[in-house]
Amino acid sequence: MSLFESINCICCGKPIMLLDSNLDDYIEHAKKLNKEPEPETWMWNGGAVQKVSAGYGSTNDGDIFYIGICDNCINDNYKNGRLIYDKDYLFSYSKFSEDELKEFERKRRRESNLNKLI
Ligand SMILES: [Zn+2]
Image (cartoon, rainbow, N blue to C red):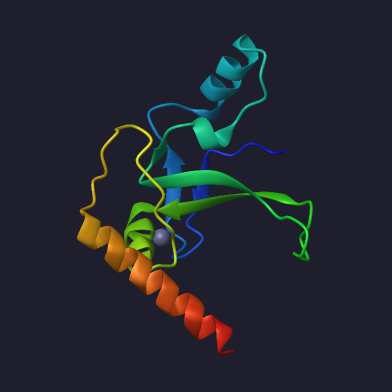
């Protein structure tokens, strides 16, 4: 894998950069832990970076990619139901009210049902 210190948002193209450090620091830290560098665990400024793997049924079956999505696009896409909110892994409470979560789910189901009509 080629390591990277910036990645552009998959939705809008905005750059998402490493936060308060540089690539060599992350590589050195992984070496000290005797682990492979994992960009998805690093601190990114203004967005999220994650590994995505395609499974059976995809023409990309077996491929692993890294994607970045900026905070603005995260916020837009969980509200319109295209990004599915799971939970807050830092705190035991949700930052969203029950009504907000129901609205996100309603929009996700609406889009899913529209897709079935195609
Ligand atoms: Zn974006």
